[in-house]
Length: 270
Image 1 (spheres, rainbow, N blue to C red):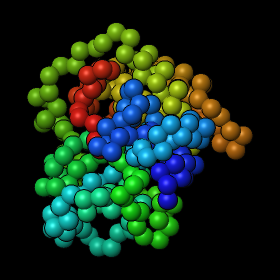
Image 2: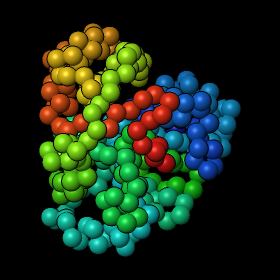
Image 3: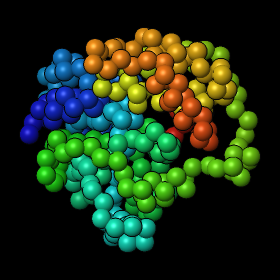
């Protein structure tokens, strides 16, 4: 499958994509933040760079990836924690023989973006991206169109242990609010919103507002405005009830370190 076909197939399923160089660095000015599911834009990008790899912006697409570079380490990790058979979702083999396991981004826990924290040779990609295209092979029934599934509970439990909890939050430095940042995140969320990702997109907005020091009551007007401005469809109107439900879930979890545009919070995934 040509990289353009791969990019269009992923965009049709509502995933946000962008072109990357062979070394996996972005060809877009703002990296994965420029990712889109707009088919016309995707076609333009790959007409200009037909050999470009396909970057997949994870959180924007409502997904996260387990990036397995060490298969033996993953097998040992799975034997230790797995509670039985689990259904895999989309997965691909990477050019160096590793694997990407792709799951639906959960709303009730934070998926950190890190390398080797879960186990040696196992990375998590959430607030970042992975690549596909030339040299990558989609696996299993359905291949690139394999249905998306939730990660198994045992895996989410181990991931959640990486998040700061009560005793750790007390040791975190105080959050310094940056003027204008909530408006920045609101505008970013509205621009990225599509019928297929409004809920995940709104949850990410709530997380950013939380992480950058707003109280739940201070964040509430931003979520209400988000709900009023996102695209709608007759069959399913996204409203403030759903937006405020995302807000409630986000504020039930511990805050991460804040992110500032241009500086970031953690290294981008690849």
